[in-house]
Image 1: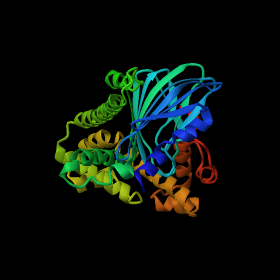
Image 2 (image 1 turned 90 degrees about the horizontal axis):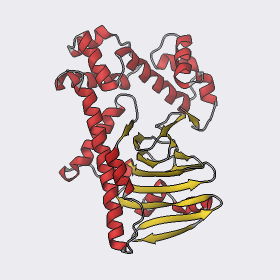
Image 3 (image 1 turned 90 degrees about the vertical axis):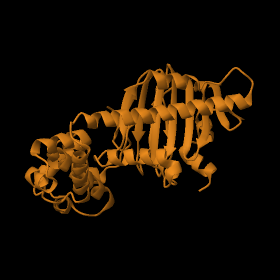
Image 4 (image 1 turned 60 degrees about the vertical axis):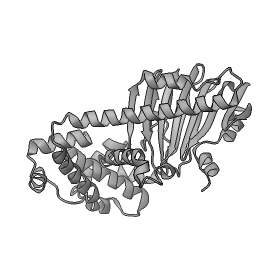
Length: 342
């Protein structure tokens, strides 16, 4: 896939123009859509500033609410979203809800295949935001080798978060990142070279500070457990086993025997690494496996219950509906769009 085709998968300014009108200008790779019409007033800026990396900046005042799509559903994306002014809603992970991002807040949101990423911009107020969008398949393609050690560490961190049974979704107040977002406004200086360098530099700083925030948040939660690195590695290994074989009959005593950890350290480790107790983590992994089977196979409910390690169909249906808002049967049949705000 060419780089131009890759950037179109992440963001297409021409599609945005067809919805909002206006005209597109390009200066040294920075594309800007300006509009001032019945749809509202403002601009969107776009720059592909690295392999698999796109920087999007918006400053708009719309007359009606507007859904701004990021990427196509077949892409697996990592989006770093920052709100400078106003507020808006955004899709989080693969859930069927949206979350609100307010002024001076930032979010790191990882999505997965077949999930549409979007931002819902509200009408009637000035809204300013930035999105650093990463196409994971492209960005992490060449992680092998020492020259790409930072990428390898970031990929390792994302994988460790996924081992908790979740996609990345963190939200913070971060004034430092927001200040860099402010630098993405078009400059009054008529110098194409310096404008490109300024926009690219601010995009990299936003990107770097988001990654710093992820590392600090993740490492802080793990250090609070008071477990040694060796003990945390044992917990991580157990978590991987549960994800790989959710149907096995796990008990705390059995996991303690296989790892050599005491029950208290086992629970502390699971809370630190997965933010769940042992039983909560096992149940969560089984539900995620059930969700996948409902979406991708023709297995009936009883077969799925057996496949994921539950013994009671009624219990499975009860906790599945509590987690997803639908019974397993309804979930299998229903197709819906994630537009319900949390």
